[in-house]
Amino acid sequence: MSAPASAPASAAAAPHPAPAKPSAKGPAHEHILLGRPSNNLTMGIVGLANVGKSTFFNVLTNSSVRAENFPFCTIDPSTARAQVPDERWEFLCEKCQPQRRIPAFLQVTDIAGLIRGAASGQGLGNAFLSNIQAVDGIFHLVRSFDDEEITHVEGNVDPCRDLDIVSQELRLKDIEVLEKKREPLERLLNRANDKTKKAEFECINKCLAMLQEGRDVRFGDWDSKEVEFVNSFTLLTAKPVVFLVNLSSADYVRKRNRWLAPIKQWVDSHCPGETLIPFSAPFETEWQAMTPEARTAFTAEHPGVTSILPKIILTGYNALSLIHFFTAGADEVKCWTVRRHSKAPRAAGVIHTDFERGFICAEVMSYEDFHQHGSEQEVRAAGKYMTKGKEYEVLDGDILLFKFNAPQQGKKK
Image 1 (cartoon, helix red, strand yellow):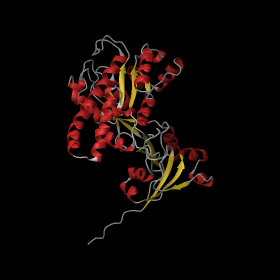
Image 2 (image 1 turned 135 degrees about the vertical axis):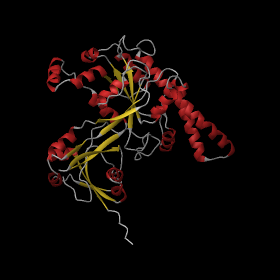
Image 3 (image 1 turned 120 degrees about the vertical axis):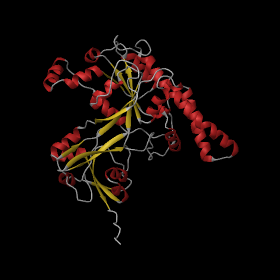
Image 4 (image 1 turned 90 degrees about the horizontal axis):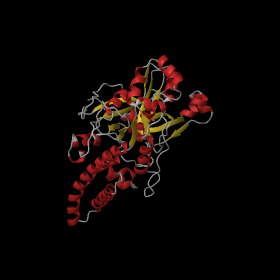
């Protein structure tokens, strides 16, 4: 799979769910997504104080931030990376035996815990909410374990109540942001009939109506123009959410907890279609400390019980609508992250901006075809190797060879 000097060779991606259907109001081909149009996106860990956020962050990213038993142990956010699991990347590394092996990563930020009233400035209030505004997706972590040595800011463990508190604080902050935007627009529209400003004003009112009804903005039915406005508002409730339930080690191993059914009912009712993953930060800490032999012995005694972190990482990656491709050869197998529905020139630009500016075409084969036939030559022989232009939408599992015109060098005077 070697490439000419003008372009790296190939690309493959981690699995992800089927793409979301576009709004009925928008053209089917646009695939406009909520959020920043970037491949450098971050998941933030959000929840009440003392629910296990920093412990989770440490095991997820192999970090060592403070995780103490008192509210606001975390004040300044910490950001680190977690490797995205991908068996296909491992296969290509085995196939190519490269000198350098660079996987895809998910950026994760540990954010200070909030308390009831954060939207009005209680606790770390505005600092907490501005840190959430800076990330692109949310791991909403809720506590579902009893421990007398770990205080709960509400006095007792009640995950559904905690979910209500966090969700309400995010909506209240969004309402505040939108009302501040709405007032000057309303004054402007009273003086002049600006169609663009009027459309923005109507979008703000639509968002406010949803939030005041207790619905998050990400569940709205938005057309392409509305998506542009919503993205410019940088709303907290527009961000994708993955719900994580932090269990005790014992409950995780025996796969039972009295709060799981009520939590699932809450998620299904308030956030239909979003993912709920039970895990245990204490178990993951213990698992990381085990030797390979100890893990083998443990799984023999407890069939099906293992680390859930790979699933959490991949779910967060997918929630941000990220996929990845990679260059592959004897020198290096490297993953490159792009947003789902990216066209070939944008994917090429992730490698180098010259690739995007001078894009000619992309030669394409799927990872599945390469795996089945064993080499690029055999894929060609099977008629599965394709040439695509600027409008080609890079698909999960593509292997790509980009061709481009190198920029002209200026003449020396």
